[in-house]
Image (cartoon, rainbow, N blue to C red; front, side, top):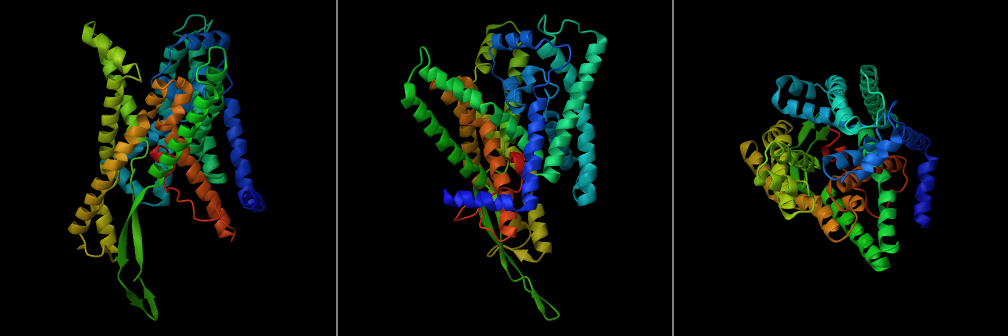
Length: 449
């Protein structure tokens, strides 16, 4: 405890770090307050009654978790940062297929600025496309929620939703620039964490309230299992396979360059949470197609894929995550490019010939470590279903695995790594007395680009 208090004092004594933390917390507070500002013309009381009557589950609940409840409240931040994430994913995919974006990625800072500007413009376009669909499906679909939904109200509401998303995007970029951690990832995480207290209180009520089952013993078991899952998720996020690389010696004048051994850290889970997001999106395709049919098979598909705790749903979900993990790892990690860059810089893997043999060696290592990583990622993704089957309420079960838990673990580790870097640069001890936080270089588990 004394070491922890000393660390807090060290953090607060660094003026730059203190200013960054205060800026981050202030901007996060503005974001949370904005998520409670309801769109003009919406009757929040009737909307709350309509949402309470819905069965819940599915992609809408996931989006609502990411938005910190703003999605179901019809807030001005209802679409949140998700359009920006969608735009970032589109730009990443374009960078793999279109030469223009590939050139921008290689142009350094100027290219990065152009890509960011294109991403912002694409975010506005995606938000403008999603906003009418959100209004039609979540607000005006229920009678009485909007007493007067004329053309002027539609236009102003779409404009407000676009403005809200642009403002959230600006807040995320300001946190990244002036605060601590990756702003976009922190906004997602704060939305997820905002649902944790109410979900936990509801779980306590289900154990101790009228008609409660299990009592304190079951609640303690749930908390212990949650801590174990968090530890396993940290291992999944931080797990790496280090490949040694030796650089040849070069003598320039009286100085020697190279001749040192470094390592290429290949992550066990290089795809982050992207396979889960892709799989969840694809899982709604069978339900959409089955909705156009009236046969018994269509009814079975709708019943099965609308139940996140069914065996068929989770088996399909698990297998799709494994497949998407291999796919996303293959398109994001290029062994041939790594081998070529290593060869140009005079580096080689001991015992492996440079060039094609090196690329084959790296590809073989990636194939071997991706299998356990994808299986573990799939197990973490379906853990909420096991929690629901065990009697945990649906809201609290989302924290036992899946996208929510992985994003929280990844963002927290990355933020702590940045704080520790500020401490070590000023010759303070790190956040932990022994060892260092092995954070990730890519924040948000691949979601923030």
